[in-house]
Length: 235
Image (cartoon, rainbow, N blue to C red; front, top):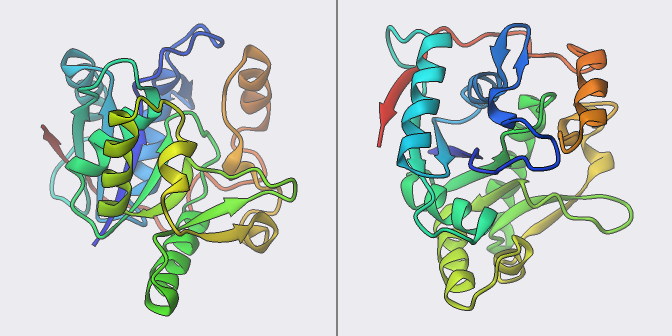
């Protein structure tokens, strides 16, 4: 079973707007992200900043994505360890998720590519069988790790986040250092996303303006097939 964890609890101080609710083609970004990940994961876990925020996001997603039957579940939970940012968000998401592997991402990637995510799952699953690796993380030529565009062995990452919180570590790289992950040079992913826009995230107004200019952009919003329906569960 595959899970996907979306961190949606950030305060968006630099952007000045809640990233998960930014609209593209009239639909909030959190809905685009959940729908894309439903194509390649068996469940999608959305991590909000608190219970009230989780309830709000659940209502937003339900209003934009009606739910007859279920192909993939969208589950809402929240960060119960304030002040630890993405480490606490990852901990909450990995604790709630049920898959052996979980893709972790933020909610601010408008061009997230399902084919790239699927490839990372494949690499992580193969690497575990080959050498016991704990995940697959994209790495840029300068050595930058895409730690929030990465597939992790879910239970190992949950434990690593728990230890990071106990040690007062707030940076997402802290739990990642504990894992033996397979590095994936980003150039190996270009056949699936030529311009690597899957990694493009929204931090500033300039980023948002560029994203709106590119939308739907060189990357496809979806691959050739669409999901038909999504089921929702609140906590």
